[in-house]
Length: 442
Image 1 (cartoon, rainbow, N blue to C red):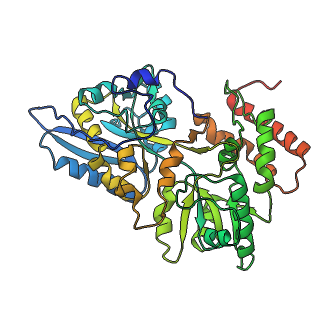
Image 2 (tube, rainbow, N blue to C red):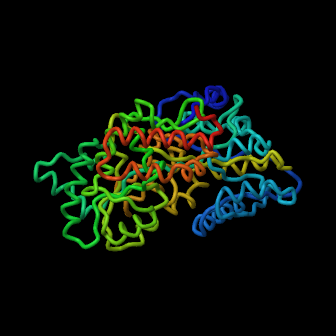
Image 3 (cartoon, rainbow, N blue to C red):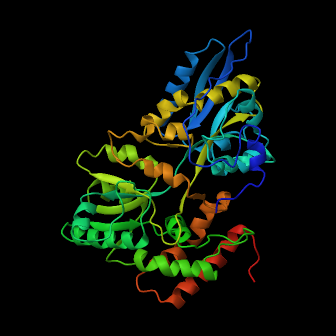
């Protein structure tokens, strides 16, 4: 679950009212205040990602270098954030002055005293983030009454759908209840089931086609379970909580659809993406990073919707942020760089790649992100879904947990499970999780 940081507002109050509404009004983003120095500051920006993303970061840095004689910034890149953070343990590897992290990296970096809080730097540069950033994004990177890193992007899970297999206008003409495609802000669990049923009829006419695909894992189950009112972990983080009454009730709501072989197929994410690109899959769940690849399939017609609402609007995802290294010898110049990179102009090269959902609302509501000339038509779905996004709990142990319970979770997706069988499987999943979380088995 998204862990609320009670002290986050105190950190953000240095800058603006933390509890301001998520209804945002675009505001002017101030230019960074550059600190005069005798020699240009030699700074390093640490990032990770594929070649397209790294190339975009290089362009952003080139743009920044062209605006000032006071800094000379270079980019150092890694394949992923885990590789980058692991490299920090090597004393011979300098920590970049500014670097990109996922939310799950923050706890370890704070413990290792690798980050320098950014709230005072932002305040000194008159950066007002009160209206441009949701309190959830700010809380995600706040601790000890300080804003530790500057929120940058989010990755909410949404539903991708093939508009040929899931033809809402045709369904509506037949009197079938469909979501409002005009607003695309939400749709109900019943509407989702009807869409899957209609897609299954069309898929039946195509060899190897499927209506909906779900990954049979904790991560694949999580957004639906949360929407149905379930919880993933115990409040004390000693175990998963699938066998709790509330979560068992949620499982009872979603599994009749997710484990229905006439509507749903289980497959790894890579296979789902392949089927979707081939036009053989009606719906799948994914984040914004799928957009560039889907755009490269010229004959594919598709759009996005939020995770369907069972009881309440919910989805899962993660945040990234830019941090200033506590080891930087030019921290003032590093702060100038961070402010520039998180401004609307600074984010333009990264946003244009199509891979990210900016947390800065001014950028997220701009044409640079919405890109209405390309699919998906309703890119605002990603922005709206950030408001309902919960970070998966037990971040550091999540990968190990997935591995430890993968076989039991897969059993939940076996068709025809009786309620008592679901209860037993959920109990086994919770017990298996204790071996990872270190709790004693009763």
